Image (cartoon, rainbow, N blue to C red; front, side):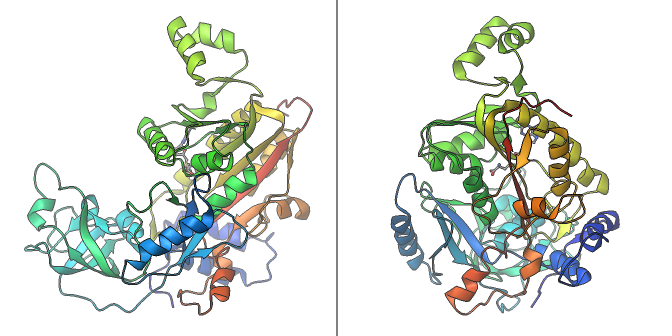
Length: 476
Ligand SMILES: C[S@@+](CC[C@H](N)C(=O)[O-])C[C@H]1O[C@@H](n2cnc3c(N)ncnc32)[C@H](O)[C@@H]1O
């Protein structure tokens, strides 16, 4: 059963995407039109599981699983907590839904982003609320809707536009506390008691032991394969999900340099590193395109005052000499079309297409910073060819020293056709394609049948692993 409308997008973006999935080059055992329709449907629904990465650098997985089960047992509908058969630091909680929930007379409208979070188990926090009934008081039962097209004005008392039902909850605030001149009170505004998709809220739960992370993102850390004592670069780090995973896999031994262009986001990386007790992470605010210096001494003295230069060297901040990292992760900024759930994608085709050149600049810096014999992992959470397979084809052509390598674990599908890669090359890539397993409702019966879909009913995601070979890498 599909309860939500398909992901809607500008016709030009839809056509662009449709060409990827229905293109002539694409040979498919499935009906291409059905696969494309399934993609648009599954993207507007939440994935089958909530995935938690366990802090196995601090405690054994089973201990964390046990503590989580105990914690959840205090909630009314405690879901089972499964371990993942191939990922030693993952706990999976099935998401149940869509459930039957009766509509109530009082309606609260939340922004689309807040709505997406509610579908993944969150309560409604005050900044997410756009509209409430005129006389809403703390203690009132309300139905919560998402303003999927972004048309509702903040402070409205009703909304007649397109909205999607998310479930029922109990208000913890009066309306007057939400829309006052000095901003809303902080914290939870609506506690979701009957969500359409049932999944526990993890706000403030075992904060140093579990970290909410999509399953393909956890796979990225394992594919990178960091080892204790290595020097690793995460070029686009915030909020630090993958940075902290890398540091955890290294047993907090070695150095993980985390770069992030936006300062406030970089601070989130620091917070997460602290929360998970990972002090081998060194985070800096930096545009990673400029993170390489061919001659560090010259770079420091020519472009920075001496004191800043000495400070940079002392704190190990960017820029870095060529070939100075054992492994590099480029979890690139991207068009984000694989994110779930998402009911409206508002970007223009120009915006979607703007990422390919940026990703190429970042890839170029990554290749320069990587040691010979080192590993580069490139990943995105989008489903376009241009940002995924086409980037791999471009990188192989531009940097003859790069080869693509098998990935362990390989839980997704192979890379898609249409970018000129050979069959063997595509087999080495990893694409998570939820559309291939899309069934609609999340009510599998046995744990086995449920877990069978854990690796497929995920967000849309792409991973490529490269090795930089012996020869000095000059751009072709
Ligand atoms: C896909 S997100 C990274 C998610 C992160 N790896 C994680 O798992 O938590 C991409 C991040 O790259 C940052 N970013 C974009 N352009 C950048 C650049 N030129 N240099 C450094 N960071 C950049 C964005 O601000 C964003 O936080």
